[in-house]
Length: 388
Image 1 (cartoon, rainbow, N blue to C red):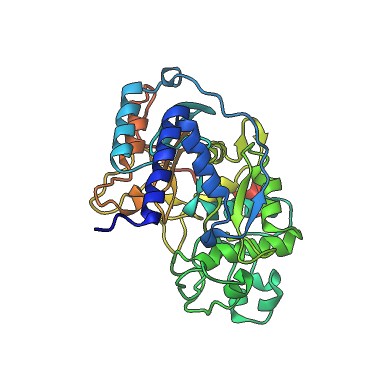
Image 2 (cartoon, rainbow, N blue to C red; image 1 turned 90 degrees about the horizontal axis):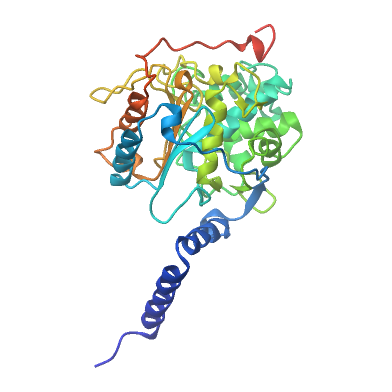
């Protein structure tokens, strides 16, 4: 009778060595292993370009009671998140981190795929470019920004249409295996009138990144780094490129520390300010939250949560908005309460028992100063683009 194959024996021994090492050296070894996997140029996500960060110290941490939040309610929210396969739950209020819970061997510093958080950076960087007059105004047609579409009917698509996923371009299977992202986005055929129908597709974010490169004269990774990522003090991150020296994916797959997205959320609830520094001109975040004509449940790469889906639990604040999408990561934002809730993990995207309002409602309603929902503010672009 033959024994097990040598490769199987070797694999078992290797697993045993890793388990023993993890037992001796603790969770830090597992964190280092996960970071190594994320940084490694795995065939699916290679090559990559660094988005240089400020690498500043972690955000201040305080007891939840100091921010008028009930610790027991936060623990209940964590149990719900953990039961649905989450990797992290981080809660911040008034620029303080008040609660953290991690699963699956991860931590604040664990580098992971940001999934559908990634396109938000294109929307934020567009606001900076408009305030710097690199882009004229949100309704500027792409015929003025992309020479390939100077005389093309698709040139009627506006920056706003791209931000609101209403370009009218034909739906795509995706851009994962495309060797030239710019060419692929520019070749997307028109299927409908711009601004009429919302369709979540990668070409819109990719075209925004291309517009930013053309109008600023900088590579997309450098522009995001200089205008956003470094100024937030986040650690170095990485964009996935279409080919060596090529263009970064703006539609997905940024590799960053999962905890650093709490910094993005803290900036969003303060209308572009992060820990006293004005990163984006006032008014742009309100513009992103403005309901789109193509779908009033969405703004620009964010979901407007005032109206729940049929049969779903309603959100407990009318000004709450959500950064969410494929993959299951969630960033719930409540400006009226200066509350940011970050939940990472795949379960929200695939588990039929997941109620998207459950965790933020538990947190909001635990606050001693919680008030009933208020009218959601509108957008005022005059501070971002004078005269508009």
